[in-house]
Image (tube, rainbow, N blue to C red; front, side, top):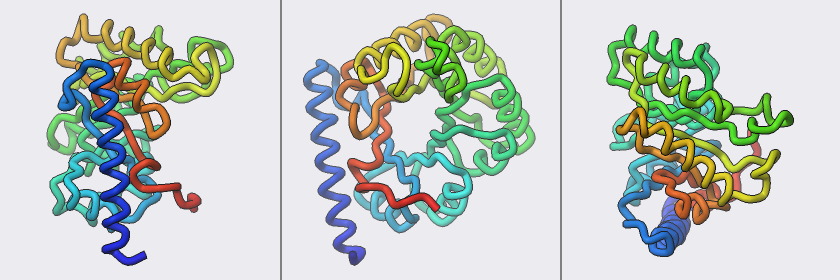
Length: 242
C-alpha cells in the first residue's frame, strides 16, 4: 500500500470512529468536547503516526517501551501527546519518562516511588498519572491480573498525589474478561465511574476517566469516559507481534 493509499484508509477509519464518538456523546447527552480520542499506535510504524498527526490526531498511546521509545524519538518533531498504557516495569521507567506525557497504568506503590524518583532526578515536567483499576480484582480469579484492586485505589491515589513530580489525573480500566463484569462493559464502566467519583471527592482535579476501546467505546462514553483508547478501528487489524 502506498503512503497516499494508507493516508486515505486512515482518514476513512478516523472519520468512522469520530462519527461513533459523536453519536455516543449525543446519546449520552454529553458535549463532544468532553471526550478525547487517544489512538493506540502499538505495533504500527512511525510512518502511521506521522500520517495520523497530519489528519489532526493529537494523542497517541503505546504499551511496550521497546517499540514506543524509538517511535517517539522518530516522531519528536510532531505536536503529539504520548500516553503509556501498558503494564510498566520499574526498570523501564527511565526510558518511558523520556517521551510519555501520561502513564495510564499506575497500579502499585513501588511504581509510584520509581516514577517520582525518576521525574525529580530528570528535572522533566510533572508526569500525569492514572490509577489503573483492575475490576476483575473484586473476585479471587482476577486477583493477579493487571491493575489495582478497587479497594486499593484510594490509597494509591493519595500516594500519587503526594509524590513529587507526579500529578494525579484520574483512573483507567479495561472491561474485564473474568469476574462479575465479564461480558458486560457498561456495568464495568459504571463501576469505574463510581470509583472515579470517589477519587474526585478527595482530588477534584483528577477528572480523567480513561476507558473504552474499539469494541466498547459507546458503553464507556455512556458511563462518563473522558478518554477513549482506540487502536484497531483506526489502524486496522494488528500485525502479529514479534
